[in-house]
Amino acid sequence: MTPDDAFRAELRAWRRDFHAHPEFGFEEHRTARLVAERLRAFGIADVAEGVGGTGVVATLRRGSGNRSVALRADMDALRIPEASDLPHRSRTHGVMHACGHDGHTTMLLGAARILAAGGGFDGTVRFVFQPAEEWGRGALAMLEDGLLDRFPFDEIYGLHNQPGLPVGAFRTRAGAVMSAEDNFEVVLRGLGGHASRPQQGREALVAACALVLNLQTVVSRRVAPTDTAVVSVTELLTDGTRNALPGTARVLGDARSFRPEVSATIEAELRRIAAGTAAAYELACDVTYTREFVPTINDPAAAAAALAAARTVVGEANVAEAAEPNTGSEDFARFLQHAPGCFAFIGNGEASKPLHNPGYDFNDDALPHGIDWFVQIVRDRLPLRESQP
Image 1: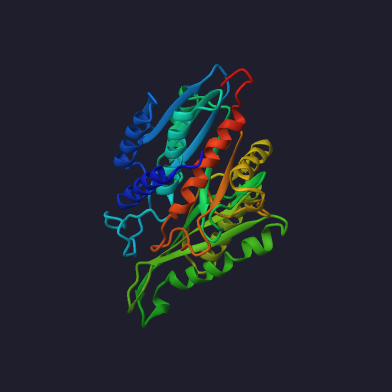
Image 2: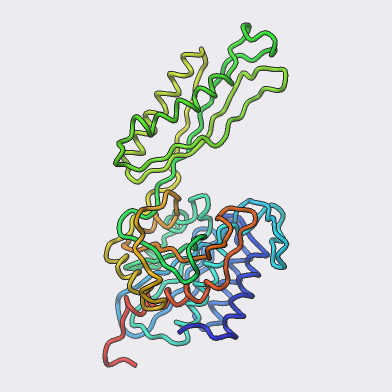
């Protein structure tokens, strides 16, 4: 099952080509075209393009089994300028594969090639290549384009590389594995003026600074200690300049949680604190609060199957159940609202740069492990009957 040396060289070439030509969400035209071409070259005739915009779904059937398993990879890159001197560095200014989706796409292609050539399962496999994961819209777009009706599946599995985890290591858990992500923007409006005469206006910057500090009490004083939550202010923007006090300030950020009730508490408290802070400084206040990602909740049986498949391909010593959930967010969660499944993590190496870092690169040594895991999942979940070859 493990790719031989020649196949590994091909995989590295594919992955580095994807890395050199990154495409932002819903702009993955070249990536999707190459994915579809390769799937057809493997002998998979049933390949649908343009699903949810730029998504690709391939269907492979073997035997007479009526169960189906979906395997998912994301294809999009980030609007981050790459800071490396790698020969395969990004050739697209301001865009790079800083999260390893080039590797995820390559691993799923490798699994498709092995399963198309060797079979070893009874049923249907859906290979789902998703666009626009990074901004939480790609899974929804595929679902709204009839994914479940056009390409039904009983279970779905996906993975993500994890910097700091050794290559060949796997981690996942039953239940909550990644958090929801909410975004917020608070706009404070007053009356700007000259920096030398603050008494003549109602400037917004001091109020914005107070708001940033006040928001720190949402988690510490309004969320139960037994619940995980994060509220982070990530931007503070004003219309002021060096000698002019701003009349408008924008405070932006995001919140993470694992339960809808906690998300609702965060929103309610944020609105209350923003309104109170604005009133104290005689400012008007507008709050926008949106929910971008839902929590990623692994099905217990699917998580057990994912861990079992990992033990088969990399050995017991390299597999562990994750002790706690990750407060990052993942668009794969949308699929888990409709079918049981599991999202897992594969090691990208202990020396790997962090995700979303301009110096990050996917570790090609991880490719065979991800491929083997995808293949094993299919063969475990769609087993051959004893009479089948």
